[in-house]
Image (cartoon, rainbow, N blue to C red; front, side, top):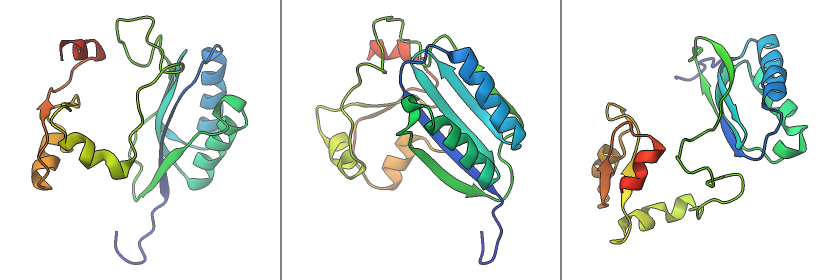
Length: 173
């Protein structure tokens, strides 16, 4: 990414926990919009919300986000965008899932009740506390392993690199 380099692809990651009763209809509508603009990536839709990472021309990503934000449930949708020189995804997929995260507890509904949000500036102080255990559930082969980042940056924190677990496995901690 040197001076003057062209980054033709916008990569956008977003999620929103909100009640979605019309998952199939929403999936079909988003699939049409993204396909028309040559987007690639994946949008997962479930009754408790959606989660996505997509990429394509800036205008196409913008149209998909604008389409979502026209729906009052997604009016405040926040996306994190970056740029890429090459298309990072092979396919365009919009999938309906029975739930976003399998907790094994039907009463768990992140669209209704969530934990405490932590501001980025407060993160290091939080994970440095003796009464906090940080569980890294990403794949153990991930180059973004929390344990390696913490050690490299000199933070001392209780970190468990749990590998690829399911949300149900978290109850063991």
